[in-house]
Amino acid sequence: AQKVTQAQTEISVVEKEDVTLDCVYETRDTTYYLFWYKQPPSGELVFLIRRNSFDEQNEISGRYSWNFQKSTSSFNFTITASQVVDSAVYFCALSEAGVNFNKFYFGSGTKLNVKP
Amino acid sequence: GAVVSQHPSRVICKSGTSVKIECRSLDFQATTMFWYRQFPKQSLMLMATSNEGSKATYEQGVEKDKFLINHASLTLSTLTVTSAHPEDSSFYICSADPGLSQYFGPGTRLTVL
Image 1 (cartoon, one colour):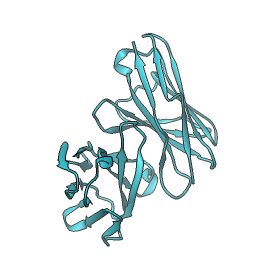
Image 2 (tube, rainbow over the protein chains, first blue to last red):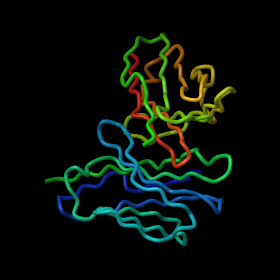
Image 3 (cartoon, rainbow over the protein chains, first blue to last red):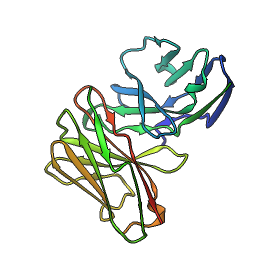
Image 4 (cartoon, chains in turn brown, purple):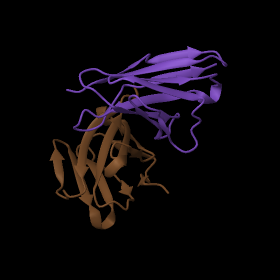
């Protein structure tokens, strides 16, 4: 079964628009970690955020913000006032506690196109 | 900060040849490293867990005889794609954890002609 679902395959916005990337996860563990990564055309994964399952506080980092809701198993990512440089593929990922701690399960990714 | 490197960044080879990809943790020791594969416009899929000093653990559906993994030291894991075929063309990424979080290498793009 898919552990991480990113239903939005591709999103196109115009610069300065806000955009939210959805992520829904599935796990039976009570302790787990959620991540967002950015993958520009070069291919290298850029770490954006890590959140553990016990910390439901929303987080803001500059134009980026994350909304973690355990009740709906979602960990959505919002970019405010998007810029062309935000264009990339964004991946949501899950790692579970225990022996599988470092095994990442990635969503299928959302390609964000920000047009000038 | 922690860095994971990969070599080569790109490789083009003929069908039937073997290709070795290196993954190094540059400023930390990693008893465990992970290998992922990403087909064009698709997600990253975990292939195997590389364990220092012991056999790698492969995910279901990954041929261990085709993708040989050797983790000979605490800073180096190698992935060898044996008898490569065009369908093996992909982006291969490794990762390691220095104890804080998972760090990913820059990836190796393999093209098999």
